[in-house]
Image (cartoon, rainbow, N blue to C red; front, side, top):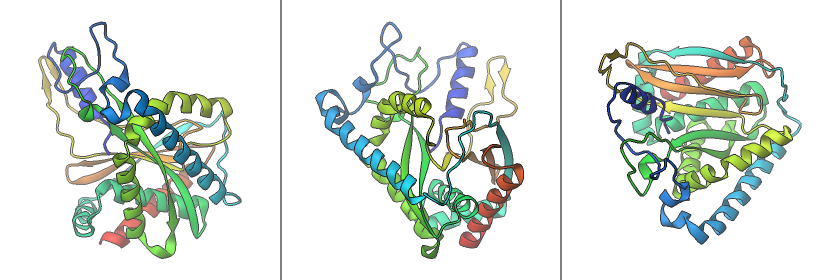
Length: 297
């Protein structure tokens, strides 16, 4: 699921050039609008209470599964002095084309393939267990699924994240893991968790930042497909566009943004030096590529 970064960037450039950006925002006449009012009816009003209860129950169960399953295998340090480092990686056009062909053949999304590669690489290099349940994060833009189109003069974004757990089992093979990731994503989306996660995010983040006892996940991925936005905005001209992931010491151990650009697959990977050094981060990146090459080429 793609982050709306390029879309937001295009909207900001449009506003700077005095043009009306395309796409929905969220606002009332005073610039405010309660978020749930724009959600599907199943996630508004009193109907929201049981849905939130079920969602929180599943999240707590998954959290315990992750912690219990990785007990004695790895517990990433939570170090306030940890600093984030960016690791740019480029996969050649031949490998990107092989991924696309394999995606069609196996009926698995590119997002699921890349997510599975990241999970498998982290499991092999950091957790080193034959069967490990890992928490994973992907992101989604809610704006296309809102019930109303709000005033065009307003710029707005609803960004949410899915957190779910999949078990990495080496003997099942890569495609089984990729299908598990795809099914977990489909189930979360079908169950409306995109809306519930959005609503619960402030409380969850407050709890995580307050306790400082556990990480949100082992990995996180944002996938951007071909970047197709205008290059001219009045007197402004866009010449280059770079994407960078963000992280913090309580976030995922290994995260990144993957982009298909000019037929090649570009990764902006991020790691925290209190978790691993540059050599360790590069080893995971190499493991990810080897896993995908073996599965697709």
